[in-house]
Length: 169
Image 1 (spheres, rainbow, N blue to C red):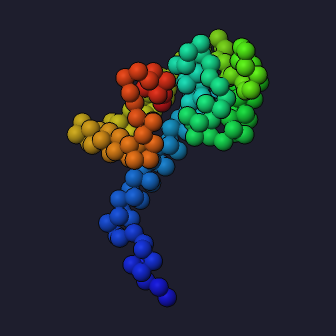
Image 2: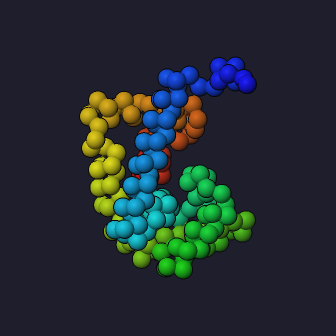
Image 3: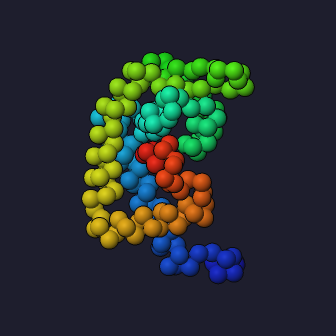
């Protein structure tokens, strides 16, 4: 049998660090999901879509862009938008002068619904993620998150002119 070291496996310290990070985020996400479902009857992933549309120019985004910024496959976004459309929260439109794709557009009802859900999401984030941390730990978590993003997805780092990214949950 090959040893963990020979396999290039994580050291105990590396494994502890990764597990703490991964398990903490999974637990936080599960609580956020449950809070949103229970109090708004809106899955957190759908809230995320609606919130991004709320912050987008003209409350609309190309479906392909929505898939990209939510780290979703096109088929998942199509399904989600279909469900949101059936509930009257979003409508699909062909972009003016460009028939290559679709826009997802937030309806007035969708705007009302996402603004109603926003305080629930904010309270849940505060309660589940921010309040248990000291101010120093929050600053450290911010630095850690930004360092990981700089390596993994630099375009996701917030820039002063990127309103869409700066305002997303």
